[in-house]
Image (cartoon, rainbow, N blue to C red; front, side):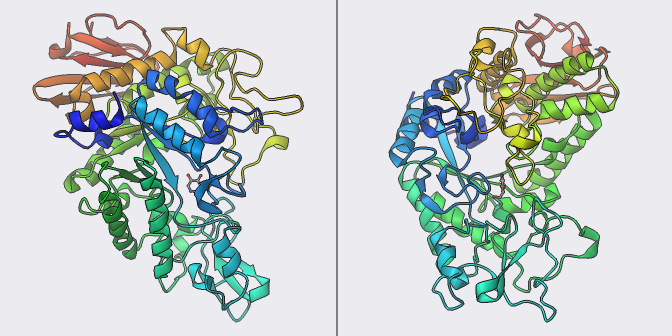
Length: 542
Ligand code: NOJ
């Protein structure tokens, strides 16, 4: 069914983005069509059928715009064109058309806080203090001793100020990220208009929404005050939380909502508390969705996860805001790797550690896909991938994030579906264990992590209790979480064992109930027998 047909059929239901499972494509590492060792849009287009088979509803594609790639695309030099490395606008249009024909929506990454220092706006702005674009960025004179205007620290290199001195014009410019990513000055009305135009450009081309990068940073305190000493060492982008941003978000929301396709804006609001993040939903008039990052760092511990879930519910429910869930992304170690490292720290032998981290990653997938809120799957998580161990000589990212960005292995051939020519290699080493953990091998193996994701997504789609039902805790022994999801009289219970030992579950209502999904078993074992295996998750219909 085409996306448009789904809109018709679902007109009286909740917005599509509440029921959707999102899949993040990091295009450099997803699939390559031209053999240059860097993924591209044509490569991604070939794999759309695989994603439709997996069952995901929406794709979030990380930046593919023209860029000098100082931050691998998060430094944009033309918001309205595709970088030749990735293809061109016609290729993008074809990708959107194909995705829509397969019933998947396409959300693109919008980077509104900063441009590249090679963007024509910044080239002009830095050409003279009187240039027409000067005020499009944040410039300040040095302090009397020549130092930067305040103590803000940039992301990535925490010893570096968030300011770079521009010798030719004698002023500092602000960059909350790399110095090659100067911050736009959203106090300047022309910036607002120009950035709104970039939204219109892609909306007119038929995208289904935006993932808005570092969106909480588009407002700054006009006094540019020092960050207090108690947060020394925290990059300013994780602290920047000022009222004017909300006004700007309301304008963005109004713009996006004038389009008829229920387009979504999901914001990256990287602040330290879920309560602060929740305010960026406004009164239903700012972000449609905001990423919820604590689970991205959560260790495999029942109490920790319970805390994350409770904090999320407490912060979002009073606002009627809809949660999101994410285990991994392109900025942080994959959850499989986090669990591997924890097992190594706990002194487990490598074989046991590998077995346990896979079991945990499987159970985490069931958790992700059964919580109340929109799940985001990071490319490769559905294969159970761990981070690549990138040798020193091949590290390229200023933020040390190469490992989770390793290319996706598509098959068991020597190049794993990355048709590099002689003398060319993939831009990062292939993800580990690619002989077994590749798309082809896992598609052929019903017990694979890939099939688990597929079954869990299908179950979520077939079970409104999972996609939109209420959430309620079930009391269980230490180390185990359980919750009940109910919709229109249908109730399912999710049980997750965070411990490495089997646990007896003594709940009369569950005995003999139907097991719909088991994290470790391709064929659910019929009826629940009162026992949860080590690091196992089950979904049970009561
Ligand atoms: C967040 C993005 O996810 C990250 O990859 C990027 O480096 C920063 N924002 C800056 O754009």
